[in-house]
Length: 201
View 1 (cartoon, rainbow, N blue to C red):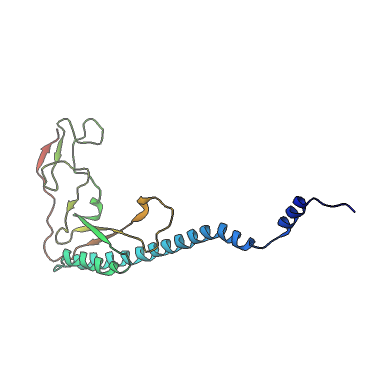
View 2: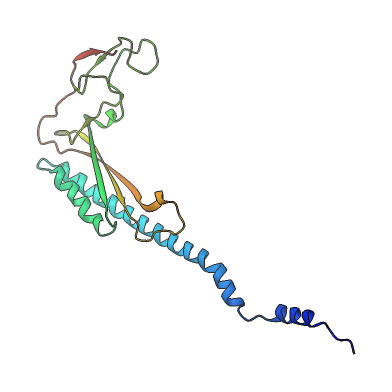
């Protein structure tokens, strides 16, 4: 009778023994599963928050476009609607007004003698928005007046409910943005652009 050395017999027993395999497999799979689960919940919160923010911005922009519109109250509407969805949310709202839709992102008129698309070197321009300088975007900060087109942009920064583990510190906050374009109610005569001339340095 051939005897198998004891250390070989024990090695065979260890290889054949499947006790504890489930625990090891769970230890390997659990971190990946938890990461995917929390990441999915985080993305779900972001999608829902973006949808609510879009709706709030549209409502606020419409309210501010009326003759008796209050921009501070409109901003508060946005904050109130997203506050329960975005923990610790901070919003930053900006408004830029234009005479017409065609003027959005249009530069002020100027004599571009050197064809470099910049007003410089003594080139003359028309200070259409009356701020004393040439601008590559004719828009004026604020809610504008009667019949003006207003671009209302809100940036919301918040801490996610479901923070994804093992991610950089810079991922500790989320930033969402929404924009609405509305034309103010025609409650008075619309002010036209200025025709004051100037020169660029």
